[in-house]
Length: 154
Ligand SMILES: [Zn+2]
Ligand SMILES: [Zn+2]
Image (cartoon, rainbow, N blue to C red):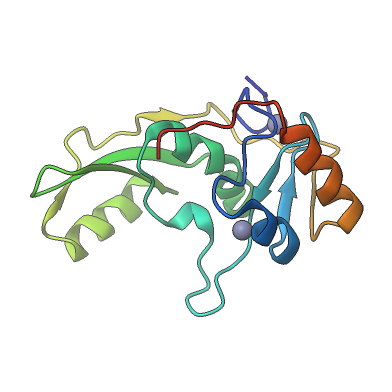
């Protein structure tokens, strides 16, 4: 597992519409393994990808680094279930944010009220970059994705 971005698949992201994401969105460039992680703020709501729910813990882990980096703090991934029994994962900076979310979403519960995944301590890395990519970088990254099994259950 990459110590900086918590994934062992260094070309797995973006999962959906990779070209659009790499071309249009600001990326967190992992200084350790070179993985690009979308860190773009959604224009309307000012939210980033990590603010949204994830279908699996594995996918949530792929975006956790952008949460930690943005908040300069070790955020937690929590398992949430809906009253219909649907399970999803969401990243929160602290337990208070989770509690606020649960108060606003009465049909959602978090059984454990503790993270299912969190890294010990927030750490900065010397080679991290956050910026838009060049056409050359996108081409190289996409070619490196070829042959890598980019399969995630989502
Ligand atoms: Zn994106
Ligand atoms: Zn990495």
